[in-house]
Length: 372
Image (cartoon, rainbow, N blue to C red; front, top):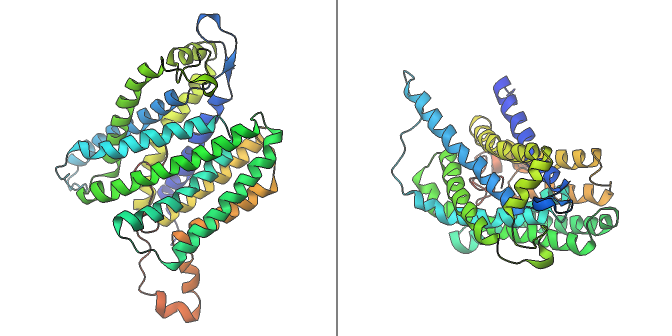
């Protein structure tokens, strides 16, 4: 069936905003500016402040949800089902996981390339699959186990590509290795977030935009408050600000004042996450979850291509191989091989009754907030 213009628009919006989200964050990281008190020019390395901005973008989804509810009430035949009563505190544990995982990933983005950052996030399949078996009692199919193994191979290839490309980038080899490991570590936390959402949240049938906005609210409030103690906690060489503390929000605002383009990058990051979540949810509803997964994989290619075009990275064939292997692993885990097998005569009867797919924990879905 051919897509309508509306469906094409949603797909394009998801691909565009998903790519902008990572590229805008990396763009901000690449800026240098003087800080407060006339300190010498230094890089804009404020991962926790950037994470606060990301949660602000998610929080805005709550406003979109209530706007849709208000508009639906004025229709002759309302289409939105009335919300079931639930405690917003249900979203606190997933929000804490999201806050921790997102902060770690923004720290890692300062240490590695944007394309590797996006590719290595594919490792979430491994940990989600294993945790869903251990804590949700899932039984993974053979193709899903194979997808996990292929994904592991893909991660190794991407890691090797990073080792080779570290000589051509501004990042030291030790930074690249640390950044890649932090990204993978963050995916363990993201997988825990997904398991918590599956076990405690989905059964309440909460509208996805409301779920994203509620988690964004908790993440924004908690992490914004944590910026205060972070201002005083020493971090040594791990820190990128002149005071060598865990986070210096005042230094960040001073840098923005001296280089207004940083504000544009931050605004792009904040706004893109809100539109990306809305578009992703709409793509799942209007087209299919399979399409959402494919578009999410394609944005990795867009991020890599743009990074090459603007000179942030150098071309390495291993990255293409790694991306291809990760794509195959994701396809196997999410059941995208089934339509191909269904076309073979010997598989017609076997696959005719198979449903399209189940959620990432069953083989396809992402966390409620699919970008952080």
